[in-house]
Image 1 (cartoon, rainbow, N blue to C red):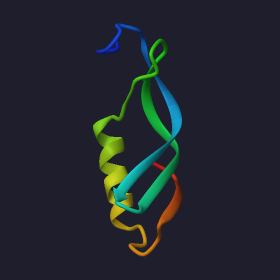
Image 2 (image 1 turned 120 degrees about the vertical axis):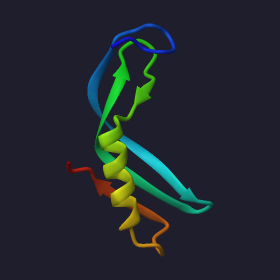
Image 3 (image 1 turned 180 degrees about the vertical axis):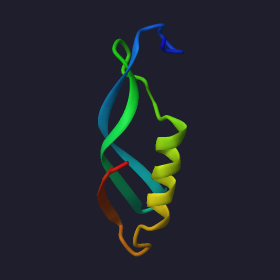
Length: 73
């Protein structure tokens, strides 16, 4: 697949990625599967991965300011 920004090659990779939920709540997903451009670094999340992330976010402790979660499919 080609990158929509620079036409580089998009390949499967894993990355640690933060999600800001509210003004002072951050969840960091470790080993998140992404599609990443080998030239510019732009990344995409596949629909199935984003759905799983949303499900996991729904179960996060609402009182935690910082949570680190290891992604598991």
